[in-house]
Length: 109
Length: 154
Image 1: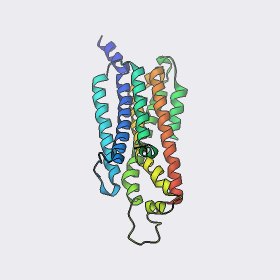
Image 2: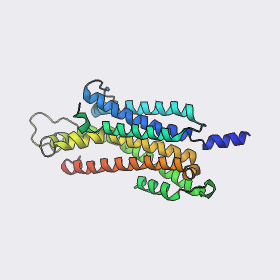
Image 3: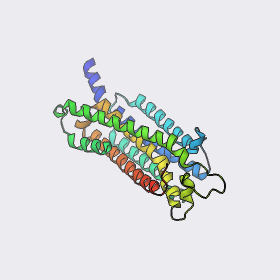
Image 4: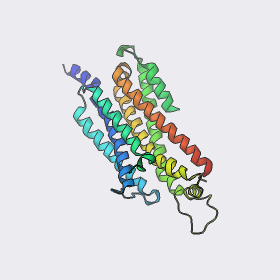
């Protein structure tokens, strides 16, 4: 029984979806950090002054990615999660994140 | 190249039955994905913290030869301003997204091994994320070539 549960937990898709969705959250966080900076609403501090604000923006986005991934992993590991919706949300977040880092989008502000 | 190999491998090694997956193949694929993610992170961190500071260095007032100051050199000509305003701005952020995506796929490759190749939904998502990662990295690399052509960092 324990072996069966262990095997099921090992192949349950929860951890994989948490990983993909976590990356989507990270991509979206990157886009939001960039657009907030360009709109003058929030500028992440330069954590490494020679690199300027990009060091703060990217570090903040990376931290959000890791926290999001950790939270999702904790909730979903060992569980079978409905994958279609998670896939769709992941792709939307990645798409928005990439879009928001594109300078032509900033000019629409 | 590593990304292309991983993308091809996920597609080519895919099978409908977990028992058909050769264990050494899934181990090789997981190793390849981890290597890709590690190389991407190294590239991103070196690019942000080692290569970028000299690029954005401000030249002394009145300096005529801007060859040692790539950003100022690019911005000094109307024909190359876009290389900073568009290309470099994208190069600052998009590689980080690519590294996050590669890490997610590498994690799934290591944790799921043969299941990744046998589960069509998991394999499909991994393929999609890898493909997005490949497109982003290729695009950024091309922009990097343009910038380096006009203002090489020496």
